[in-house]
Image (cartoon, rainbow, N blue to C red; front, top):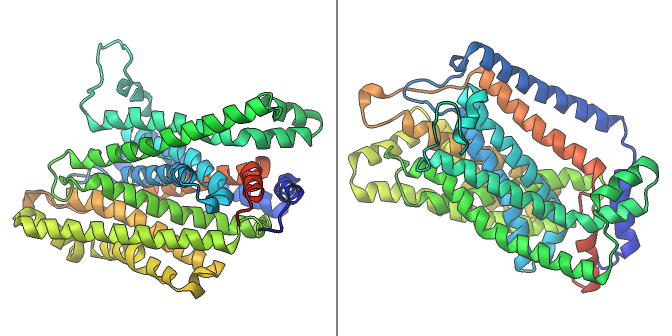
Length: 435
């Protein structure tokens, strides 16, 4: 990285914005088809009814809420990683910060779709907003679901501003090197950036402000999501550990998703000089740390259930580990706590293929964690005569595939139209002679 110059950074990043080849358009078309398939499944559900989903009595929350919590975790971790590492001046964040912030914006948009899908009658969602209506109904502001509406909309606003503020100097660089319609578009997007001293001072203050605001906001928002469960009396949910448990899980899954996105990005866009192996190794080390926190959370849950001598809590956790959802439970435990420990080996964490494969396993494990939490508790409630099982249907599977396709579709569009690595922050590293 010490061999980089300002010109090299500009050239490397701006070369990624050239006209794409056929392989890129093939991936775009494939992901677009996946997103259309998901939208078609949702349209089918609206026409036929929510009964086409696998949700039933007693499992009224299925993959829609599972995916909601999963994507909220991915969304929160992106800005949290970028903001906290910025405040601590961790230089290895600079090459991955833009990807993490972009991941946040797109993931929170995907997460916001699932309450609409779960609602069934999506056109009545305005009843959750504090607006006058013809039936003089007002939302129940004591409901955790109302907390979600307020918290996530606030978070989307702050994270979008944080992301866009960081883009401004880079948008001006693209503007100055473009012609025709492209130049006009980036002239509008760059908001008149000229690089004067006063603008840099205001930019630095604003970026620091948003980083400082985003850090506690992210922690509070994902704590609010955990209260959707913790404020109930369902066994396995009614616990005070859920807020830090969910925040730790969000960071764990977000770091893994950053690796999942940055490793192919590094290879395809020839970012090896910017996203170095040292950067990827630092992410892997942090995943080991967050994996240990998640393992501690799992152990604490089981210990509290045993220590309380509450027969219902004890039975719930026993059933999770050895009952109907035992395969999902052990996938969660192994993928989130055991497999990340492989990063302790320097040989593994300094090779991109093992790095990428393990990051995929962590993402799978975090999805199954949400499945076990949501379906595992409501399927095994207080009354044995109300116990049941839940299995997703093809409609839910299609919507889930559509959500992932839409996320990667948006990310692919981003990397070809906007700088996916912050040129400004990379130049700051050279200026301060930090490798």
